[in-house]
Image (cartoon, rainbow, N blue to C red; front, side):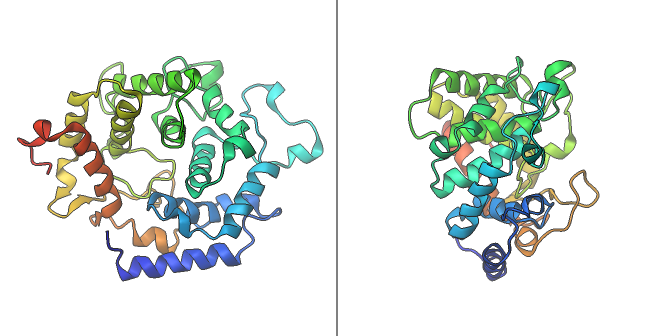
Amino acid sequence: MQTNQNIRLAIEESIQFLESTPHLGMTHGECSRRKWDGAWWHMAALYEMGEVKLIPESAIIGAKYLLETQVWPTFIISTDDHPTSESDKMKMDCCHCELAVYYMILMAYGCDLDKELPWIREWLLKHQLPDGGLNCDPEAYTHSKKSSIVSTLPPLEAILWHTDREFTEQEAVFLDEGARYLIEHRLVCSKQNRSVIDMEWLKPCFPRFFEYDILRGMSFLAEWSRRRNKTLPVGLLIEGLERLNIFKETGGLRIGRQVFDPRGPWGGQPFPLLEAVAGIGDVSPYLTRQLDRVIERLGPEYCMHKDFL
């Protein structure tokens, strides 16, 4: 899949940024998370583009060091979860979706975080709620017990996409329960009244980072069915394809929104690569590739009569 000249130049700019800045150093951990021009987001954009190997090795080493030394490895739910020493109090809090994105970047690069930082996978598996999802709001664990779709997808993806062996029983339950959660919510709907929770989720978004859209959920379910040898929720995926049809054209799938939209909840200063691959209305080769995998999983017998191919 060809990359246009603007994107190639923007990739080079991000590589130079990652090579020449101390944002993953000991005193710059928080800067690395700054939306959207911190080092983590440059790395995450390259990962989502399938270009994770272009990340400079020095940035990968810095990222692992940051996770090892500057992150408090406990999700703070109760008072007992807070750090007590002065040095630990200086460490950064993480949430499930943020930690899962970091994990996916480094695992895709070739790091063995399950050996080097095993607490990350343990964290993700530990915080599944009874409904099958996760929530980055600590109060959900003490009060509502209700998950967030946004918080749920990155941890599910981390376990599904980055396990190159047979799943343990705990991992299998985690994935199956997560799939149940998505299916019961019909990817984007409230269980109570079946209305769409957030209409923005119907618009394809790239790059997503931690954000959710319907194709992200569809992609997880398609791969979950294959890896876990579970029944594919065909009707639900076809319903998702129909919802996406207004963004489909001959060249592929068009981008419907930007995660860094200043009018949205995550507005912030973008960087050239982010802007180059996120143009609203542009056909995204990255989203198109993901959509094609979902359609391939459904098989031609389900899609020949639809305007999806």
